[in-house]
Length: 274
Image (cartoon, rainbow, N blue to C red; front, side, top):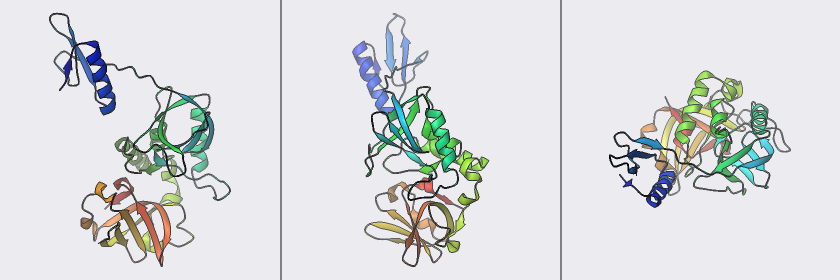
């Protein structure tokens, strides 16, 4: 606990609070002196920390999870994925146009601020951020809450994961947005074909084996479907050995792998057990 009295110390406490996302509390003693602490005291009230943010106009909305700012920076919304819209290489996926139109409407005539996580850019040189409107609306979270987006967590970028996961669980339970479309109904691993396995999928099956190599962990579902986790990301999962024999659902992009299919998992939010 830190308890401070003068203005310089208050400034330092506020800076520490912003870094740790902790609250600052203030109270007045019997002599009329103000005190500040990062731990709530008797008769203390929370001290409001004024934050000065930079807001940027949006020049273009590419799809439900990618925008371009007026300064030319391309922003990929962190922690989420929306269905594809039609472009030169891909056909539109169910719900993609709706997500894009919603985002256009939300950002029309508005500015956004950026909140970065551990990694500032991806391999395509897009900036990775959570975006907030001037009214305080967390766009990433709202897309998930309305069912226009699913989670897509890339460690070590884990900011707001708990809130996003809760929003996704609620949207899925209510069957709103993408969760009402037949395209996103879970498929059995044994039923995957070249025709029905493109794009983002939900796949379920029984874990037949768990194998470890020096780079990856492999979960074998049925005979034709392999789930791969890098050893680096396996730290986010509980003991994977306990999954053997269990029914699981995994979410992500299906790829051809040997004589069957595979999916790369990065975070436990992309897996359900039954």
